[in-house]
Amino acid sequence: MIIPARFFVIGCLLLGAISDCGGGSSDAPQLAPVKGVVKLGGEVLPSPVVTFYPKKGPPGIDVGNEQGAFTIKTNGQNGAPLGKCKVTVVTASGGAGEIPPSDGNEMALLKRPQLNPKYSNADTTDLLVDVSADGHANLQLDLD
Image (tube, rainbow, N blue to C red):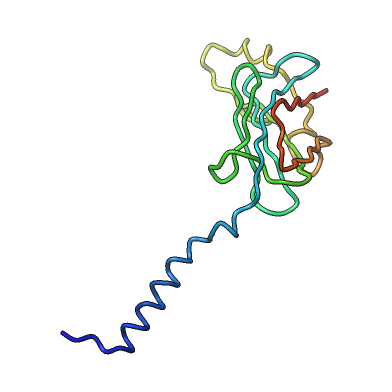
């Protein structure tokens, strides 16, 4: 079977357009490495969920470990978006208003650190981090 030239050209154009549909690297936000630790009243906050909200583009996020350490990722890539980012912090062990399970561990809930609700919302947080191209290797977020 012989394919007419115009169908071959149209097919090549469609193939080229499809290959660009995934969004190229020019669409991806510029990122810089951000690692740090969250402290509450000078003590390590275990399992913090830290989110960096840039003025434009996707947020960067990580669920920290039991020592409060976090490493931000954005769209699956290591790093936080460049520029000034509002930062929110909540605990991974349950959000505000969540009904805890009745599993015999209710007393442990009393020992869980309680965060100021202002840190849970990008509109109310007073945490602001300016992410430069160099990033942050030892960022410390101090919550009151």
